[in-house]
Amino acid sequence: MLESIPGEIISKAATMLPDAETAPDEAHNVEIRYGRRGRVRITFRRFMYTRGNTSRWCWTATGAARLRDKITERDKTLAEYFRDWQPTPEAVNALPKPLRRYIHRLETTADSAGLLRENSAPKDRLAALSKKLADG
Image 1 (tube, rainbow, N blue to C red):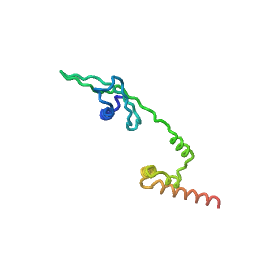
Image 2 (cartoon, rainbow, N blue to C red):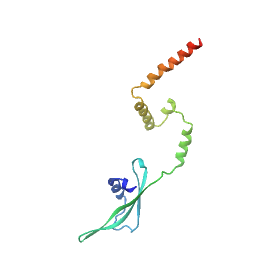
Image 3 (cartoon, helix red, strand yellow):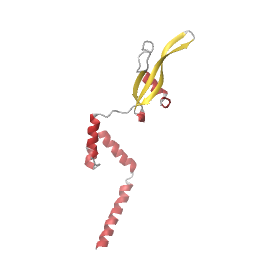
Image 4 (cartoon, one colour):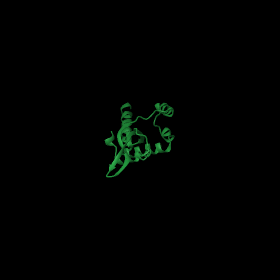
């Protein structure tokens, strides 16, 4: 998985490590949140970089693993709340503002011109009129 993480993310994670010069010679782990992958643990080891007469301790990433998010009591409570939740206008409007905006944007993106609503209304009326004529 390490090869799929961009260098700038790895270098950002490396800034959270202690000074390589004085750190113990053991693996160090850094947990970061990386895009859609969620939480990722990157493992670093220190190594000595030598060029000419100059030597310097540095960090190098040796591995990465995807972490599962822990389920908290709050998550369980939310899951119970939303188990029987229905997307009625009242229920959607009672949601927190960011979530409400997201849902409204989804509706706008899915039917930006309102064509589905406009086209389904005449079909409903036609079906009701046809049934009324057949009964009467």
